[in-house]
Amino acid sequence: MGSVGFIGLGLMGEGMARRLLGGGRSLVVWNRSAEKSEALKAESPEKVEVVATPAAVLAACDLVYCMLSTPDVCKSVYEMEGGVLAGVTEGKCIVDCATLAEEDMQRLSGQVVAKGGRFLEAPVSGSKGPAAQGQLIFLCGGDEALFTSCADDLDVMGKAKFFFGAVGQGTRMKLVVNMVMGSMMSAFGEGLSLCDAVGLDGAQLLQVLDLGVMANPMFKLKGPKMLASDHAANFPLKHAEKDMRLAVAMGQAHGIELPVASTADTSMKKAIDAGHGDKDFSAVVEGQKKAK
Image 1 (cartoon, rainbow, N blue to C red):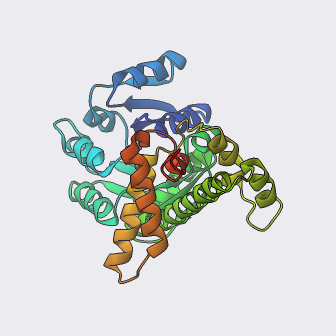
Image 2: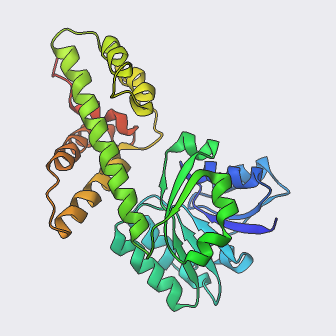
C-alpha cells in the first residue's frame, strides 16, 4: 500500500493514524505541535515522514485525512500560509473527519473543489478508545467515488461507514448522534447526582440500570468513573458542548425546538464554567452535584 497524508494527531487522530500504519499504510504527517508527529515517527521510523506544513503533506500524497478539533482550528489549518488549501491541486483528495457545522464543512468542500481537488466529509462517531481500537463509525457525504476508493482505509480505522449524500448530510447525522449522546449523559449525571442527594447508593443505580431496558455501553463504561470523579478525557466536555450547541442551532435553522438538548447544553456550559472543559464529557456531572 502507498503513502497517504494525515493532518491532525490529537486525541482522535493519533489513534486513527496508528490504525492506518498497522493496516500497512505509510504516512506523511503534520500536526500543530511537532512533538506528536516526531513521537509517531519514532514508533515507526520507516513508515512515517514528518513535514513542515499541511501543504507539504498534499505535495507528497494524493489522499490526505484531516482530523482537527474545532471549526476555528480547521479554518486556520486550511487557510494559513502553507495550509491545506495551498497544497490542493487537480485531483488531490481530502477526507475531513472533523465535526463542524454543516456550513463550515460545505465551505471547506467548496474551497477544495474550486482548486480542482476532491472532498469527502467523514465525521466519526466514537472517542479516543474506539479510534485506537479501529471501532469508529464514519458518517460521510460528498464525493461518492472517493468514499468508495478509500473504503479500505475507513474499514481499518472503523467498524462501519455510511454515505448520506451531499456534503453536509454526514455532518447533520453526526450532530444528531452527538446531541442524543450528550442529552443521555446529562440525564445520567442528574440521576447520579439525585441519588447522592437523597442518600441512595449510585453504584446500586448502575446495577439497576444495567439490568433493564436502559442498559447501554456508555452508562456501563462511564458510570463507575463518574462515581469516582474520574474524568480522564476520551471526548472532552468542551467539544461535546460545541456539538450540542451546533445541533441546537441546526434545529433552530430548520424550525424544530430541542428543549432537552438545549437544557443539556446549559448543563455542559455550567460544568465548563466551573473548570471542567478539558475533562471527559462525563464531567457534566460535576456541575450537577448538590453543593456541599
